[in-house]
Length: 334
Length: 289
Image (cartoon, rainbow over all chains, first blue to last red; front, side, top):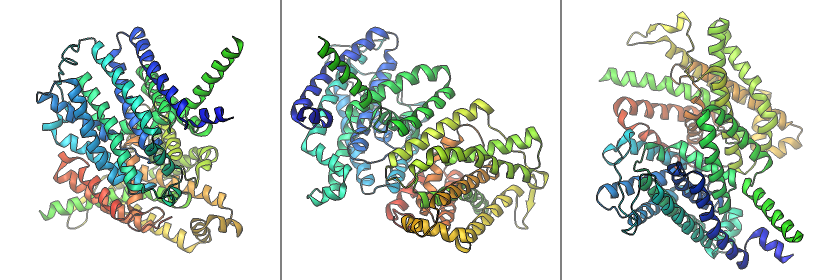
């Protein structure tokens, strides 16, 4: 009984650590499969990873804190622009650029969190949208810093650790991104299972009760927004480093809405859900949307409706329980 | 100088009226059913498409085309209400509401393109509305005057409906305390359905008369999705006067910004939105729930 509970809820220490190890194995494994299967599509896969970081970042505030936002790509885009400008200014070390992205992401996250976390419900949603749209308008206006509608181009990062140069096929960039994603994912698992992460979950579930046991809600949410900003910032920096261009689409409303859709398709409130949703959504989008963008919209619309009606916790829990059953079945047979 | 101010003012009022006609339905719906309906713009778009089809392919006259568009949109939208919206009325889970209605929007965009194609669809105006009209101090397109008149009439009729009729009493009772209204024998489910039809009909009406300012094309639903939601939030959900004030203020700021500093895009618009929502979280004239 205790065993089943701990797997279902995931709050005791042992399965949490085993899931960390699973992440350490699974993410590089999926990365390797992608590398072997799509050697000519590494640019797409790298972009997928950068957006996965955005989705994970959104998961921290929406899934774990219950803050509804359709403006999260503002943080992602701002960090991408800052990292891009740092690179153009001569700071070409990729790891240093990641740190630049993370710091600017943290600043942007804390700033928008300070505004958005004050409210709940409709004002919160509208504020998050307005912040996103304001950032997008600014990015368009400040064309000396952002390149305007042409995008900020000519970003050429140096070698990773001074050894591995970025190549034309994007191999170095891809491996670099997979490694970063793995590290970030494991650290985030530690974060959301820490006492701080659990308190955030408590606030989401019942903020009144959380306040009754002495939690100060607003500062917690702003801090979580800061962490979320760090992750989005790393994602933005990865995109700037690998594609060499930062466009207005990275701060757009569509990007924010898409990230939210990916998160909920996978399942908000678990990091696995964000990871899975981002992967599945973007793979489908890549192939179906290339064939016909409007058929893609029809399918996506039907999928969203079906998820709200039949799988409100997202697809990842379904896949997870399916995998668990298969493993158990195989265990019994052997 | 005075001419510029006058020109901006008249444009702002007509744009604000279009925003009002479309958003007021959403506002009433959010006030009563507490549902964040991001698909509201999609229903306005359906109205525009139907009117365009009725005018250009069937050859109906303009007033008849408006009626056809409004009724047609209600007929198209009701299955969504019966099958989907009813499940999310008055639920606290905003995320489910957002996703369901974004899903409906995507579906409608895809279908609209499949049926009508990706190009924008004009809605030809009758001769009496397409010419200029001399106000004495300024000549403006007759259509702008028509839009303003439509906005004023919509506001007055809605006020009469909500404030002076039996239905309005029931509606206000359901807004104030749904359970108590139910206990007193008011069938809230029917009130919800009628309100939904009213909201969708108003959206379609606004979509048709506002097509000059907000052109009808498949991404209409996505492009103005946020604008309508912002108007409702700034005005306060459920308040007719609030929606009217919000439409006018936001219409004025947006039009002025686009005239005087077009390179800033919607910067000032959203700056104002952040300011107002920060100071009045429930909207200018809204109440807390």
